[in-house]
Amino acid sequence: MKPVALESEGEAWVYLQALPEAAARLEPDSPLTHFNLGFALSRMPGRLDDAIAEYSAAVRIAPDFADAYRNLGNALMKAGRTADAAAAHRELQRLQAR
Image 1 (tube, rainbow, N blue to C red):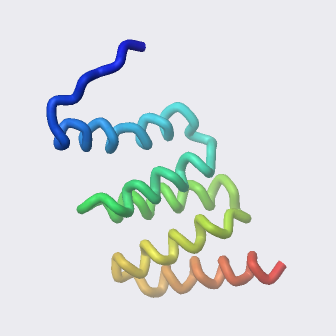
Image 2 (cartoon, one colour):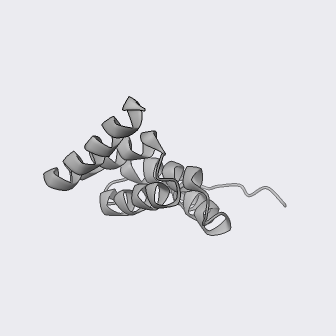
């Protein structure tokens, strides 16, 4: 693969945003890939709902993924979905008690 020279920080940001989503397409059954994509999306303006979807995919694939429940709960809380956030944090506590 030939390296690409980027003209600006804005262009670099576009490429960086595309990387995690490309990884999720390559590894759709990987909870860690969905977790990492959720993490990246949660830091991008306007992408919180997408982050929630990715964290949800991670826990659907790996129901014992405690860190994904933590981040899912935090993202849900940020989105104002307190009941859903509480449910995710309860699941986190249940997993940590094992």
